[in-house]
Image (tube, rainbow, N blue to C red; front, side, top):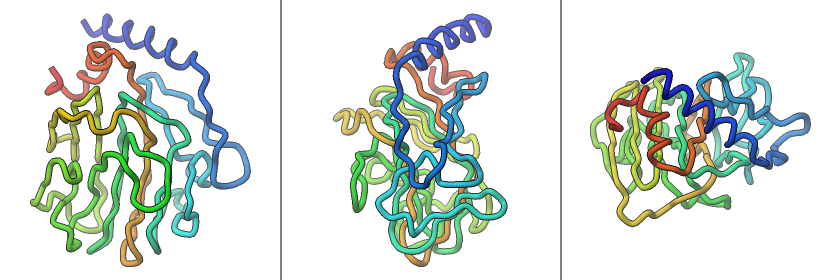
Length: 227
């Protein structure tokens, strides 16, 4: 079964990445981050040196520090991926300060202000009652799952209208959006306000095929609850 899943994934991966992908947009000069998948199909969206490969209307809020971490601080801003995605897995390693607020958007529409699209909340101790792991305004988590100033992993799986969110490998949201509110769009990360300081040290995406059954066969190995 494992070999069969690997074969299915390899065939789908080759077909998917044979399609033309536009990745010219970037926030700084130089080469954009190569969209090259690893053996499991994950693509790193950070090069650890620049903001290359990202788009933003407000570059003032973002930088890469000496440790190669993406840092957001200052006024509201969002970094958008140049490519759009329908079915995908999207994960990041995140650290947030006390009373800080951030978010991981997916199927988001490119634009100024608060993006239209799904948001997986990144927020532990601010005044917003929707805590880390919430699917913002769809599934609300009121419990604080993560301590301030500690690293954690947030992992989103979107297949059709089913959305799963994992925090430190634990499923905290498994939601079916009967309205199919957002079907395709960009990935984005958020810098919420001047009091927030967020660090991202890894941001990855694994594009999945449009066929829900094939997409599930790929994602289920890391997330058995997809069965």
